[in-house]
Image (tube, rainbow, N blue to C red):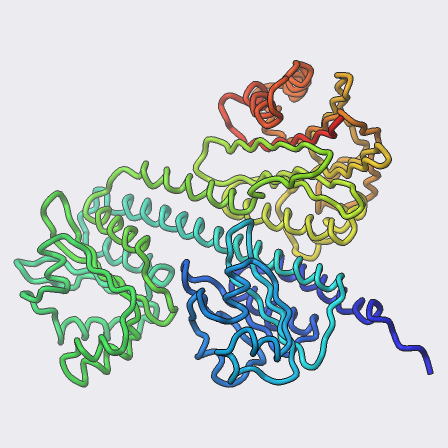
Length: 589
């Protein structure tokens, strides 16, 4: 009889499967996709029989957004629950610490779960966090007695980090894309309305353009001698347009009612119903047929905004969300009011451009590290300067401490701008961190990054420089994929450009990328940067590099971050035409 496998050997297949799950998480492009990976692939790879994903929907509330394998009634019972609840998920999110409990420990610590805990099981709860900001938690339930190796604990934490970064990227991307879509829609609406006399066809086009991405249906009514007449109706299902017209014609709003379209018309003040419950429909229905029709149209959330010029209101736009599950927010109300103003009169869009720029910067901040790690024996500083535009860029950077005392660092640039470029940038940074955790050797990391491009079929061009410093050997290994050469400033003041023999961009065929190896002793400084630091329109690239080298030779006695910031401001293009990311890593003397 062959000897039994050791726990480490038994865990190896699971570790390989969990590593594959990381790749799928990185490729997820929606919350639904993340839910599918967690409740299918992660559950299977971990050997669990139950998996659940809970997310914070506000500062005090968690929602169960996905579950597989749970007991009947669990999904409805825990659809939403307070963050202060006495259960493992809420505690893990509150504390930011993972929990691994047996059924007996669960009942002892959380008495309110006594009736719902299955015997002979263990539950692993992993908090999802980006920096200090909590997003939710993943729960995995294992049958019987299960011991997790230290390697499995590390992988589970890495999976949770990847899941959190993916969710954060998706949220930021969705918000920015929503803002961009609103900007484009408002600009298009203004252009259509400017100088157009055929208001009926124009308003119909406006209503149709907003369905279904903003609302499931939209109705626009204009004031005709004190009577609101519906001019345009658009519905996600064209066959329901007549139902909407019938609803408004057979059961018109009372002109003297204190709420409703006529009150909006009189006051110019929007009305907003984030949640239209069935109880509310019953209260407002003018009979069984009226109630049946409203239920058929699946009214879930709604708002009405006045068409207003100065102090005169001449119409009302009504937005309804239904089957797609969208619930109008305060931000949506602001958008609806803006759209109503533009429908009444095309106005300047400069303010919205400013908001879009803020949104783009928020997206970039969401996917870049909040701060660099504190590393004994090292100093690090970063200077990130976005271009003076309204869309997001793709510069990325990070520093990773390795278990053997080495330090990995990288700076990269996704070509192009906008939400998609920043989304690819987030995927790149997450993928690199994952690959570094598996094997930090430079040639291995970049080789696997080429395979990531092949697997995801990414079309975006990406350059990157990656380096690993080994203080035990006083050595530095650098590998370059089409990126500006790093600069090494020796402790004695000598400045060296680390020219690399191979500069293939990521995803364009790979090939042999032999790392460049050089000394890296106490007092040496390494600068990694993106091309926005040295390139200027109409200027030779060598001129920018020479300007950078002169700046590095100048003595700078101040704090490291301040010195780097001053260097960037001296060297970069004053027109700020491109993003700049500069990472300075110093080995202490």
